[in-house]
Length: 497
Ligand code: BG6
Image (tube, rainbow, N blue to C red; front, side, top):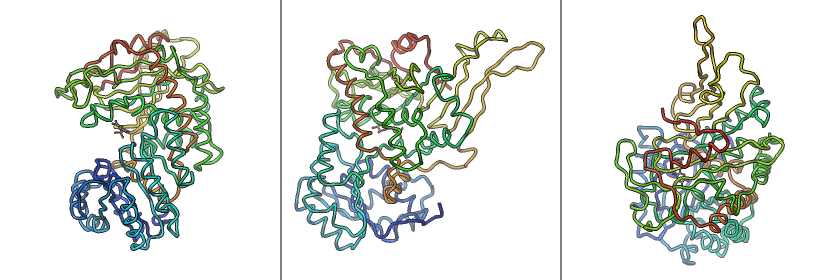
């Protein structure tokens, strides 16, 4: 795409909850990068709306330090940074204060902007109130150009609350104005899953139950819950990672080719996968998932306290910080192929990957018995942090006997393309402004993801855990993880370097 193509006219971005971490760490550094690349409209403003007693100047100072610390391209260009900061304003009001929205409407009118993007970066408990207030102030329809709303996750706590939130949103905004964010979709490597599959002829014929033995999807993080324990207590891995990021990775890995690479055809195919997931509920929720919580340990050489030692965590908490699940997609392509999904906090290494393990050759001609267990053919999509793709296969080690050794073919983003890939939020903010919803979750997609996840949550509620398995921080999960996967004669990939 040539630079500057389709850059919208004058635009305001209104960030609710601007004082939170997301704005400083992600949103403003992403806007800085967009401005640096000349991708923002000429007249572009940011209005921060929040309860705290901040001023324009204080907001600008906070965001200046955010850009300096988190911008991708370092050192920061002071001229661009100042240009961005000068366009930022603060509006102090609580989210249910009608007067605050009147002031906001006046401010937007004074700026004479054509387009307006509302961004909900608040705790989710404020979403409905803000949406109602925007509606009452007629802000969704007050601009000559477009008006859109970006809503951060978590979008609901279960199917029922997601539907309720959706109803509130649809009272005020048309679905075409709604951009539900899942930042995993903004990652280059996640988008590359579809390019890899559908722009190349050689992989797709193998991408099915005839050739794939099983798939392992891992999102391991070294971080714990940090200061977010209050939120995390009510969430756990299932709501924080599984319902959104992990299911998104699963849909992109398994969906059929869309009729075109446009928002609705892509999302249609993703929804079909979510609806084909074999439900996990009742007792199956106990058999097909494994939960655990970290206790004190050592990560990256540092001592880490246990989850229960974090402030705001109940000493009786059974919130899972590790989750493994065995998932089946009941459709023609994937029938009976197990998908093992696992995610945890305080793991030994940060790694997000999708590993497709292929079936064995029908007959072992080289007596390489090992092939089945220790060194199968695996294609790994390395989502982060070592972005790339690796294909592992057996090769003859030089010498007079047929000794076979596992070797790899590798593609590495950084070596090939140089530099760090753009941050997810750069792409997502740009797409919102361009009106491209491909990388955002549609209402039926959210419902389908919640419908599946709610089955698990209800199954857990019906069968309360007495002794939640534990794992030491800095290990790959509880000891029950191995028997969990060995039931199918498989084993977890060894992700130690
Ligand atoms: C967020 C979760 O959505 O994703 C966090 O709330 C998690 O708990 C984060 O740490 C992981 O994102 P990334 O981009 O660092 O993999």
